[in-house]
Image (cartoon, rainbow, N blue to C red; front, side, top):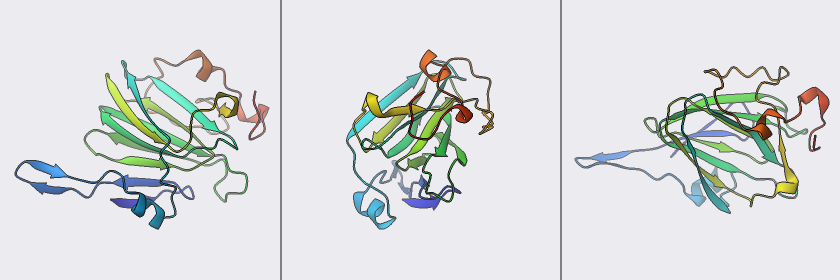
Length: 183
């Protein structure tokens, strides 16, 4: 695997190192030793699959606070997504900065999302499938979120949002909240 640190401290894009032959290729998608060597947490508590019927569907921006902070390893296995993360760690030099990257079945990329990063994505294709390896159990009382269209962040989503949950539409704007609080 090839680890490329993003402009956000501790967040990485992970590309495969393909070993091709006449049948196709083989590549490792996860290795705890390699994650540890890059200072990343290799814990996997849950694996989730998200399927999106329509391009333009948006999910996010979600994170969990202590004591249930979670890491995520995101990979698109069918179609393509535009994946966005926001650093919500007050002590971080990249606090409140965001990063976006296209993940697709074609490019085989993954995004490592550190603890206390809000995460969301937009489906760029119909019938899009996303796999998450998550480092902590989903804990509703510690879940937080941000509005995908918050002018504070000014995230440039590639498509018009065609589908979104009521919950994601009703997260607070940044100017109305403090980090770690509920709306």
